[in-house]
Image (cartoon, rainbow, N blue to C red; front, side, top):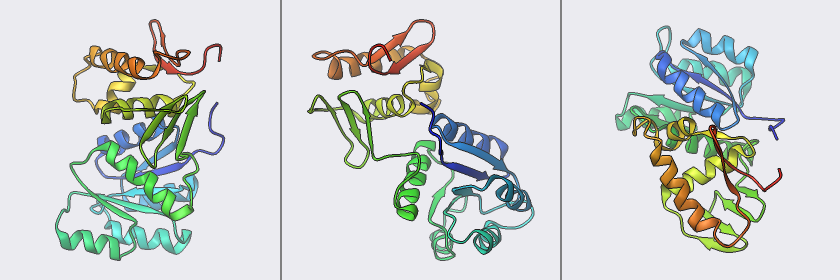
Length: 233
């Protein structure tokens, strides 16, 4: 079922490929996302999009990210902002946080780390992330994002970090069917050049750990991809 109240993310970066990448991954998570390539564009987009959280580059073509932050805070109060920048000096990090940024991530960066930080900021600033509940459940399969524990029928499953991220992605998007390309892009971050057998092997390992003693929850939709859902749903 589609979330009726998804997180609204505004990504501000003058490098379109970065802004589009972050926005695309956020949409895979079920969020809504908009982009802007300048300070003025960010303020205009914020006015029409009403974001819940902003990813903000410090170096923009018209004015710097600190100025954008000040203007956003003047108008929207405590709107959470995560800085994403090539400036990696300690002084820059301190400036970013003392000027009111909620977090600071340096380029080059992991999209998964950025999404994890955005979820953490949302939990800190709003008490709970509107779209990201700490516990995901499909049938008797339960994934706790706070403890990183996975249980099936009450039994603890020992997963590798990659298996955990794959399962988390499938459960978060359930009951949507995800293609191998989507899974590769999201879990492996483009590192495997479209080698779909990587996904097949990881799915097989998950099945051995989660589906051997109970009704299968990890399903293959032939010619499409994979889905986590209860049978008949």
